[in-house]
Image 1 (spheres, helix red, strand yellow):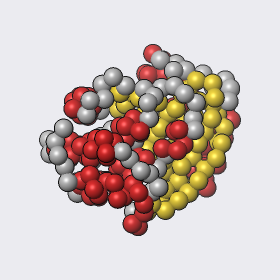
Image 2: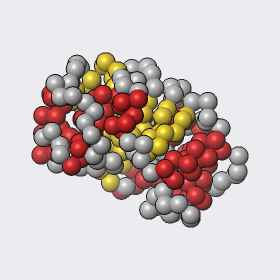
Image 3: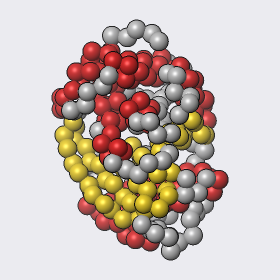
Length: 240
């Protein structure tokens, strides 16, 4: 593993969040940032190019749902729309559960596979190129947790997660400040697809990074709508 000067900044920032990583965890988290920014020179993985900013806005943001994941049922976690591996890779560094990183952009997933390998996480972390609807057809009811960070609006996320989740599985949505209308529409969709909003919590990230909201939905029963629908319909023709 390369040495990186990011480790002390990583440790300090996570400490402000109440997270105390081990030396190995801190090194892996910092190395993930280093690898992403190197790949980003040839493949667009993130608009954030400053390493310290990436620690705060990517790694810190990802780990803001660590406790939510730890309180979720045991089983495989899916990172829906993973991009550069956030939140899936930071969470995998702290959690023993298997993690699947899903993104529809094939070149991102190819690079992400190399990053996972460089981090030595192949045994627990796998990558899949494709859409959530296709994964729900090939691996229905396979995931205990679906994590989604800055991917789609809440109504679409609730619909997409429903056929992927096991009974009592959790969808964890990490958002900025969703509107009351977005939350209300998501709750209507949740009723239709066998999901329920368990809780939502808002908080400010350290060092004025911004406000975040975590919304946790639980898979409570069967969907009254045949799922998954065709690719893209959750976003372009939402159920509410």
